[in-house]
Length: 249
Image (cartoon, rainbow, N blue to C red):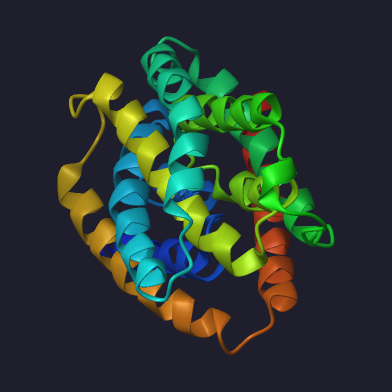
């Protein structure tokens, strides 16, 4: 199968996850780039950030049109992660590739577990949020984005629900704002010169992901969120196991 077709198929799946769940797509993008398209782990994280940025911005626009984005709270949450994202992005290229692969496998497994756990509903008003806890969570998500090239939406959504007391729809929409900001900050330090990044492949991948994000938003309105989360969680567990084996063998 040609690289173009693989990029289109993988991009569609990544966009579907981002549009439907507000996260999870980037955790699939990196292994797809490594194992299907031959990218190195460092190049894959840079490419993933590019794909996630443009896809998240597209999905953010779609959610904003339906009023599912809390701009002020989301911007404050994202701001805490900008510097950690930039610093981690600069450090990522200096880490050995097996370390990056193993770390990514751990994050993918964490994402799967997070998606399988029941979603905790908001129990109080956002006014009760502890600023220090919100800032710490935002900083952690930023560092994760910069280091591993993942948007962190699979962690941002439950964090926005539990830390900022958002309802689920607002958490999904607002997580896309956080993902976009963190990804842009990390890309600013990485630049577009990482060896092994094939921009002719990334373009079709990103285009398919953008289209998939719109389909994902429509899918979320028709299929229960529980079924979607379980499906992606199973896929992520398989990906995590394969990447961990690859890192240690």
